[in-house]
Image (cartoon, rainbow, N blue to C red; front, side, top):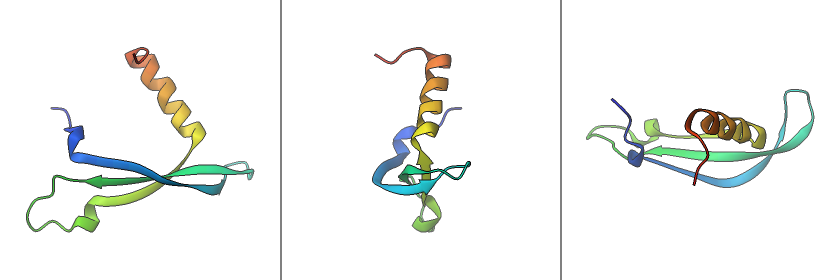
Length: 73
C-alpha cells in the first residue's frame, strides 16, 4: 500500500551556510516537513521537523528518480 503524499507539506524556507564532508564551505537548503493527517490526541510537534540538505543531495535524488521513472514532462 502506498503513502498518501497529499498528507505531507514541505517547503524550503531558507538557504543556510554549511560545510560539506570534506570541510569545504558551501550552501544548503533547509527543508521544512509537516504531516497534515494527525489523529485526535497527536502532538503536532511530533509530526513536524526540519532537515538541511545540500544541492548535491537533491541532484542525486533527481538522477535516481529519472533513472527509475524516466524523464519528467
